[in-house]
Amino acid sequence: MKKFKKETMAEYKLLLPSMGEGVMEATIISWMFNEGDFIKEDDSVVEIATDKVDSDVPTPVSGKIIKILKQKDDVAKIGEAIAILETESGSSESETPEPKSYEEVKDQIHQPEPEVISTLEQPLTNVFENSSNQNSDLYLSPLVKNIVQQENITDSELKNIIGSGLEGRITKEDILDFVKNRGTNAEAKSVPAQQVVSQPAQTSAPAPKVSSAPIQVGEGDEIIQMDRVRKIIAEAMVNSKHTSPHVTSFIESDVTNVVTWRAKNKDSYQKREGEKLTFMPIFIRAVVKAIQDFPMINVSVDGDKIIKKKNINIGMATALPDGNLIVPVIKNADQLSLSGLAKAINDLAYRARNKKLTPADTQGATYTISNVGTFGNLMGTPIIPQPQVAILAVGAIVKKPAVIETEFGDVIAIRQKMFMSHSYDHRVVDGSLGGMFLKHVNDYLENWDLNTEI
Image 1 (cartoon, rainbow, N blue to C red):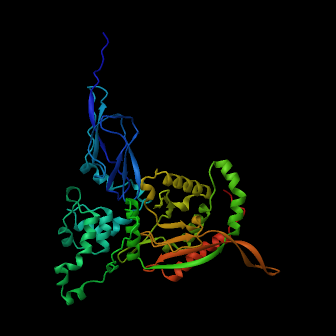
Image 2 (tube, one colour):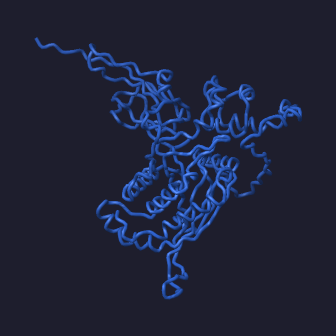
Image 3 (cartoon, rainbow, N blue to C red):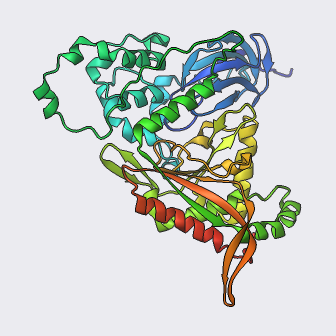
């Protein structure tokens, strides 16, 4: 008589997976399946949002959703169960290992693989190290920690803030409301003058609060609520201006050689690789070379310390179809060939516009480029993405008459010209460094070799 093993059903907890160093939580945007639905392995089951990017969470197993634990707009921690699935265990003789809890996996979340450490820098780790140690009993998201650091909020002040988030968590709204009403705090007003004088100087003093006049809403005006991404962008831009004293240098570059080279190679490249050859790989190549010439552009600031970055990771500001902005990152750009840069750029741009980026794709930038010329703009004054200390904007390429020096004398010729603007953090980058860096980028572009292979 043939013996059959009895098939049994088991419960499987679907956990919120790790999404990169420093990402500790995510907000549930929407579920793609309902309770009772059967899902297959690798199906995307839920859309989530972090401070960095929106992404989908796939299931590592097949089964039926019997319970959704986190609803839309709920916040889940990394390693926390968000749903329970009913799966086939294979047989009654085998056991399905119990998924690890958040407490069991949190140490692994904070400790990336050694080979990843040198590639994926975590800019917030050093900045908030002291704050984290002082407030080990409080869970603070990276965004909240950022505000705490910028506003110099003390440990005692934090303990007096009543959190309105999940399990009493202090939310962004809680901390901003505290900052807004901080001036009325009697304890802050009663600090003796001599005590204030004796305090050590702060590296970056909190920006003065300016009360904006109430907005008059007239008949026919439309009120549009900012979406989540726009709020994040707004906070990041204001925070950058409060943190870094911005200086911007400009230069007009003759990119005739670049335009000529691309025109000669773009068709053969697309035929060979099946994708477009844009100007961005060339711009990034020039920036990488200039960073190698001036490595003190590739730094971050942590209090009164300058962190000189080993890796050159280039952020690439990308406009999304909904009008928002995201900055995917080309890791170790100095190790990529021109063709490798082109492929990386095309891949990241495609996935950015189709919401396919992972949180790791937007982390670790050490320098950023923004192509404002895409929108027909000649130049711009870009805002530095913290904790970087500089950003380059490239404008539209236009034909102009220009004076050319030749061995037979000066002549006027039609040339391809482009403005570049370089914004930098004057705390650590002076005009000489910021200006020389920009000049070197310009020189690499103007002297582009027409015989460069790709």
